[in-house]
Length: 136
Length: 337
Image (cartoon, rainbow over the protein chains, first blue to last red):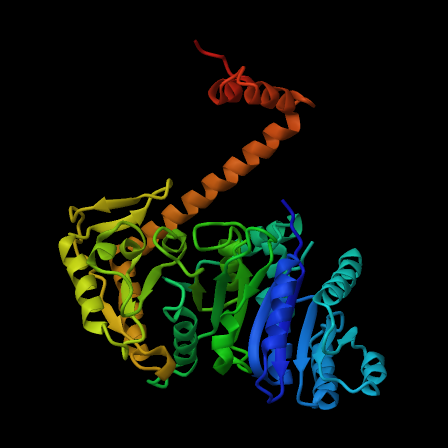
């Protein structure tokens, strides 16, 4: 029996220690039938890219509350690409100023979610993204 | 088709993608496993099991770190970690959190950590864990640490897969009756009392020691049906392995070196007594049986007439036919009286 599962890493890069949001999202993705690799706090871009490689994930969810997203995200994208994983979708939640959102999307980020976003929206976006990957 | 050469050459992305194929049980994954089989059989397989929260992941982290940084200055071994966590029986999803404890291994290309969801399997491993382990073995990982789902009493599949099985306990869990129940403690080649700085250490150790003294362990090999066959010392070599009890404090890296020494001693014992070959033989026989079963079932399904199964099932539901007779009917066997 062939069973394809959506695999997602949920990680917190940077130095802030507030991971409730990340846990809520991890739980929501789990309840949507995904396999969520939860890597915990204070992950460097290198650690996140390495985990993405070893776990062969479809998507990486990042929770950033520290304001460091414009430094962290390009580095993660670059590392994924150099590992041959440019297909992996990056989704970001946390505190992201409005003016940064278009810049992140332009870099290749697939979705940005601020406070109060329903987890249903995140689940749907990742499912849609993964379905497109499976179809390729 | 998957080209296995990059995997044999150490391409990590190719390996990672193959592991997904194996987990998903695809035809390409199975074909690659078949090609890789002849390159396997070199790795040392160490199983780590125990109740949730006893510190399995932290311990695996420290063990892998020490294999990568040997105290005696010997060549570090390539280490693969296969960490299994449970899938939700409702959504089929999972939160795999074993990596959280393994941060100190990151950035080391000699370590490969793969998290697996159990995907409905109940024995403490996923159905495809053996395949994933074989892929790591073929890819040249010398030590493979297999961490089970947080296991209670009966999740003993790990003992069939691993050469050396560690059962992790922590002070304050259960009494001496827990210790003489059948199941998980029986499969231990090495008993580890982790969190040894917690109160209750002496009682836990005493209960485990008593358990070991109550039994007269023989040489144990898993048979095809999953029972341990005990052979009581009639062989040419009647060395008996008594599971040592090791104290560790994983968060402080205390006792890890002694633990690795015990594992090495057990591996040496397995080789000297021929148990290693015997365990391998039993494991491969069990695997072969499983594959034959599933091949026979799918062959039978292919030649089954449309609707025959549904018709028999209908008779079964309406109590017109017993399950025993239904099997005979479906398999085209003579229906006895």
